[in-house]
Structure formats: C-alpha cells, structure tokens
Amino acid sequence: MDRWEGKVALVTGASSGIGTQIVNALAKNGMKVIAVARRLAKLEELAVSIKSEFNGKVYPMACDVQKEEEILKVFKWAEEELGGVDVMINNAGVMVNEPIIEGSTENYRKILDVNVLAVAICSRELVQSIKKRKVAGHIININSVAGHYAEMITMPISLYSASKYAVTAMSTSLRHEITKAKHDVKVTSISPGMVDTEMLRSAAINLGLDMDLESLTILKDTDIADAVIYSLNVPHYVQICEVIITPHEALATKNPRPFSK
Image (cartoon, rainbow, N blue to C red):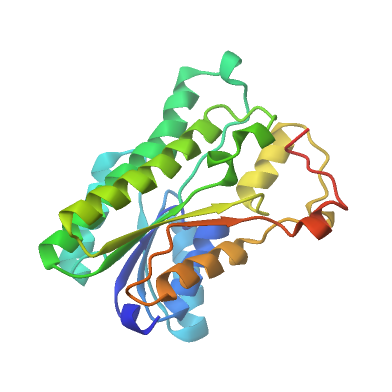
C-alpha cells in the first residue's frame, strides 16, 4: 500500500458495516479518506475514533448518493481541499424486501439510483479527476454474488439482483473504456456472499425470518475490507478484475441458508 500512502480515497455508504470497515482499513494504511453517507453524526464518530486510535485522516461529509448534485459537491470539495480523488470505493447500496410484481415504482427508482446510477456518476467523476491530473487511480465497486447468481436467491428483494448484475456489466464496460482511453485507472468488482451487516439484519426482520446470525457461517464486514486492501496492494502492472467471496462451504453446510429457501 506504499504507493497509496497520502493519496485520497472516497468511500460511499461509510456510516456502517462494510463501508465503515473500508474507511478504517484505508486510513490505517495511510490514505486520506473522504467518508460519505447520509448520517453525518455516524461519520463524525468514525472520524474521531480513527484519529484517536492511530491518527488516521478521515473527512466526514453528508451526501445522499441519490442526488447527483451532492456527489458533485463532494468531488469539488475534494479537488479544492485535497487535490482530487485517487481511489473511488462505490460501496453504498440499498435492498428493498418486496416482490417486483407487487413493488412500488418509488422503490424501483431508489434501488437503481443508489446501486447503479450513483456508481456510474462516481466512477465518471473519478476518471475525470484522474484524467485532469494525469495520475494513477482505482475504482472498486462493492458488488454482490446476487449480481452473478440470482438463481440462488428466491426471497423477494425487488430489483436488488438486477441492480447488481448492472454493476457487474458496468465494471467490465468501464474497464474496456478506460483501457481504450489509456487512462491509468484500474477497475475491480468485489462480490461478497452473505455478510453480517446492518442491511442483512434489517432484511431478516422485514422478511420475518427468525435468524440467529451468530450461529451462521457468514462473512464479516472486515473480510470485504481486507479484499479492498488486497486489490489495491497488488503491483501496479496487476489488475484484479473480479473477486467473489463466499463462506467456506465445509462450514456453511452445517447451517441453513435463509436467503435461498
């Protein structure tokens, strides 16, 4: 991670779960981290905690990624105050527990705005920042196995799987476009299986599932943060295109899969 020390990372959805752990890991490795989410108080607590623990540099900013103007405001601030963004971690995501056939158009739009359009906007702005400064950059999209194997998920989660398939395709398209344009930007898609997060616990409650997450063999948010660091830490000539992370099946088969049946 030496070549990223002192560089600027932007992490969306940073107020809890995977996002919080990614912010922590990046700051611990010497990066300046702009942590954005809607819950500013949570971000401020995170920044104070990281500063007191190892003097990490975290800049909390309120941002609703459903609103393009708020995303652009963050990038403008980053350019004016820190010189620009070098690493973009598209982590913000939303899941709605309702069937498509009975769902609301409002929720369709919310899922696509957060899970797809915000990823495209942030990726575009990162590339433009890199292009202007002629430096190296990296886009990491926190995707999902739902974006590869929707057949495994039979519970009603509206357009979530569809949105993650879009992220899978977008990551590939971005990689092709960036290569053709000869920008020094890598694109990595990290696709976890079930992770013990606030979103998962809320989904279980909304679906009326009696889940004892402590008894399940599922991933931890720190496992995904570790994958982010791994993807950034490879030699400059190496590009990690896709990482699929699942629980170890030898352990997972001892426990039920609540989202598959």
